[in-house]
Image (tube, rainbow, N blue to C red; front, side, top):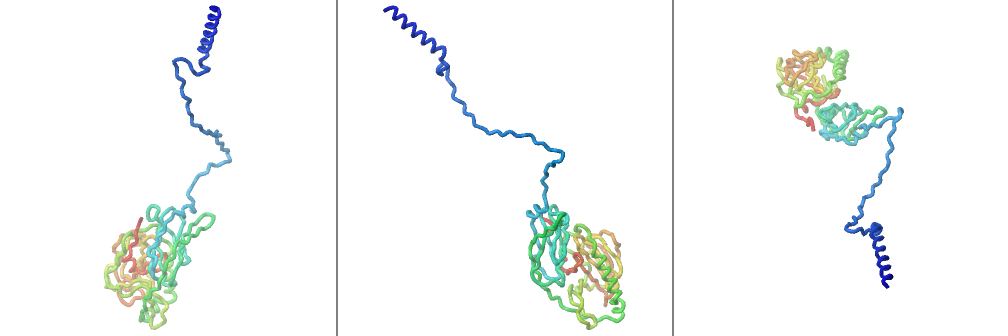
Length: 338
């Protein structure tokens, strides 16, 4: 009996000893706590192969193209309703091609940078323009082709400016309106209307270049010695006395000083952006070609040279060679920047 009891004690002791030595198998090691499993957020890692560039390959460079620029441009037209003989200002806000232009009346008009990312041009409405809607296009001069985008239509109204019937002496007709005289005057107009300064010299309204009443308005039809009306008065006449001061209507560069058989002693002023003034029938001129002048600079003296019936100042304003009403430039100041 005692032997059996000792045997049982031996067996139990052996079992406990084995359990103690292999407690790790059952996660029950004495006096120790088993840590909770750590949760790791799974990640997908893609192996990236190193980029190789051969001597023939090129790294692409992203640039703004003219097509991309077109989508981000804003156009402003002032005014959108205009009469013949007047003018409009077209502004493009955004990045544009350096040869971009505005097209209307079958002509392209260059754009000048007015301020940062603001480009503009002035366009004259010819006296001969047909009334109605006229399409205005934005042209991008691309190296490979030409991109044309319809911007807007402007409404042109015909303005009735009346007629004048003028009596001229045979001496004036023979000297100032001969075929040679007319050709010479046309040559002067073409020579002074083919080159223009880049940029704009003025920011304010133009001033009247002489003190005196307006004797003849712009655009009036002309009949000489009861002949049919075959021309228009292309400027504004101011009835100033002989010798009265003639001043610059706006800042600019003196472009030409000389005699025209029809307009007499004349001074041309380049105001920039395609806008040019001419002051005619002068008695004296006090400036020289190439001289930079400010607004109200003394230009000359009123006279009656050329085809004139008495002392007065004849003032013309052209935009890219097309005549506009000078009076409009003393009234309108479109916003200079945005």
